[in-house]
Length: 262
Image 1 (cartoon, rainbow, N blue to C red):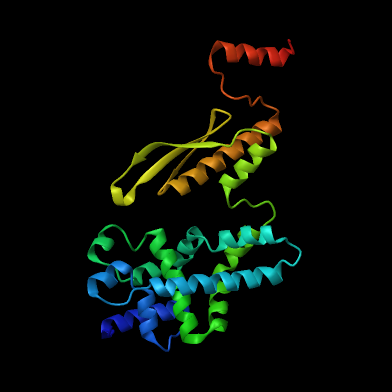
Image 2 (image 1 turned 60 degrees about the horizontal axis):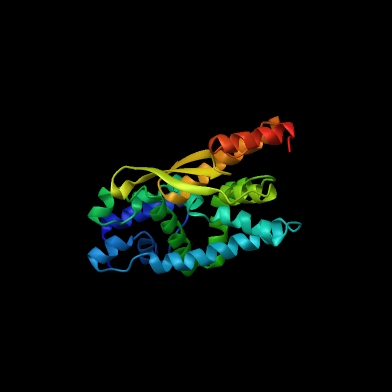
């Protein structure tokens, strides 16, 4: 695919913004080509570069964490890496760098807000790393990656930081020998291409949190975060946390336990 003079100026502007310089501008352009545009214009898209960039990113972050936190166990390093390379993190970094403005999208994808979609931004960031690796090698990619992801590394490596609230809530429930938390979609709003989900989580039959998100996973994480805060607060303050009463019989059973009747 040939690059027009206008597009070349756009790519030069992005290079300046990112403080990078590509020898092969076609690689940079491909990294910014969404599959919808590639299909529409019959040209290479960024999916293969994204695949490569994902692997390079994980290698760089894994190597950095291995040397930086020599005292931490494998499980803890995995959790930190998971947060750093998540779509949530990569999309925020991509947005801050203004990558969305340079994406090549089909007309339909543009209308649906494709330049702002988390998945598109995260994928483009990984594709950019893949293109950079092919163009300049691992050293340049490492420098660029660590410079832009350092705040995320610090955030996710802080002691006590929770990146996966669903897992943390489940561990909390297991610690107290409770049933696994139950999640349920209680409401959906918005058009099909910009759906918003509302999900509740119940612990021991009691609603403990509600989360809202652009996908079910995001909504579940927010519901779990609310539930975890609520349950820990109740534990600190010594508040009763019995499961929700189910009728008079259940209520009487709770009363008997409290006053220690047979």
